[in-house]
Amino acid sequence: MALITLEATGGLEILLAKTLTQAGFRVLIANPQKAASYARSQNSVKTDTKDAINLAFYGQNLDLKGETESLLYVPLSKASGPCGTSSPSH
Image (cartoon, rainbow, N blue to C red; front, top):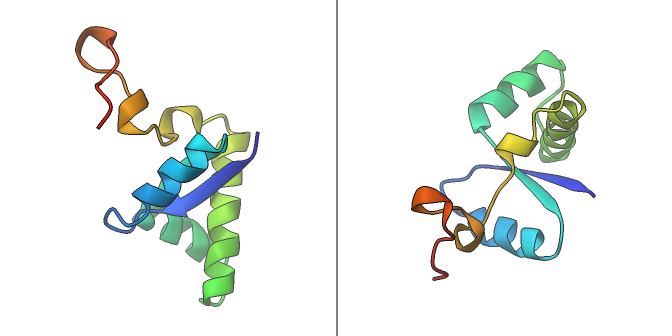
């Protein structure tokens, strides 16, 4: 299943993440500082295109290391509530 990596933008990414998750994609919302640190390690010139490519490679790198499953976006309606029960859908 495809992994889509988004950068956290103060909540603006949530609707897109939820929509993509509901469509069956795995969605990783990356910490902007960690994604920027990864991009700097790639010695790239900063452009929107390069940022998008580096963000995709960042997510792919985490996936190859087996680190994405615990970081994947889960819509609140699917997240566990207290004692492992499903949270009510809002």
